[in-house]
Image (tube, rainbow, N blue to C red; front, side, top):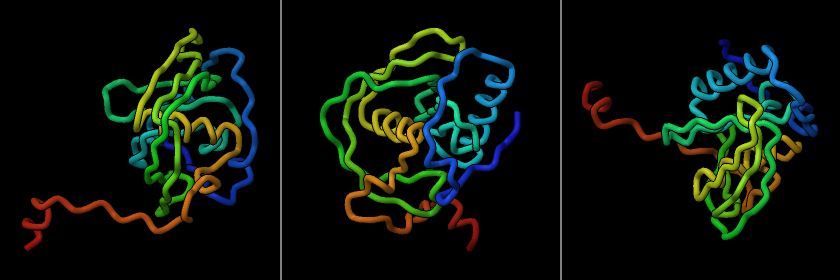
Length: 166
């Protein structure tokens, strides 16, 4: 496995439509492993193949529920409700903005074994699925932001770390 370079806003590849995956190959399997490693290293909860420079319909997601997802050729087949919340993106480092998304989605895709799966998500998982699938169609969350982008607030330091620095 290897950590790949994450493409950032302004890179033309982020605005292109991705091609379907027709078969699982050693190269695609390696890409999936690399995507997970890259996402974890960057502190993200989702990553789409174009973000690492590959125009294939592949998404990896891990919203910290011990159920990492690989979605190949994903498609949202049902959505309802609405949530408005802050989003960020590994391809727009240091920025965030409020985006309206469905609060519930049903997504059909293929898993890593190229078997059909259905994933149902609410709240953060629904947001993440929508955000990552947008990447596969050349859409960035900044296109959907309600009141413009702003600098993301840095994560708060743990109190224990603060005390040890005194």
